Length: 170
Image: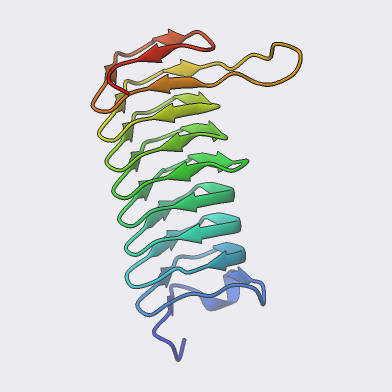
């Protein structure tokens, strides 16, 4: 707290020794953090659980779970989102309610709406995925195949992309 970190209820939060929070960070009640690095000015964690996560400046995480993820500056995550297994968000991404990610890479300015699953997917800068969206990777017996959505591409609600799909400008 001497470094400018504020807590809504310090007794309800759980922080490991490997947590490095920068100035003006705010943690809500029941925030759990293990091995967060590089969370700088203005980040807000609201009842989030974070393990081995790198947060950028001005990130807001609401009622969500982040594990083994990298989150760029200015991202807004949740509520009830789940980033795991090497998920990576570029700067200024928006991830909505009940979103789930698995080894996905979202470039700067992407937006993924509610009730979506993004697995083994590359989403180009400014790309948007409509609600109830699914990218389902499959394996050829040796490796998983990624779905690639190019810059500024948009998909509609209730869409499912097949494995090895490519959409938009690369």
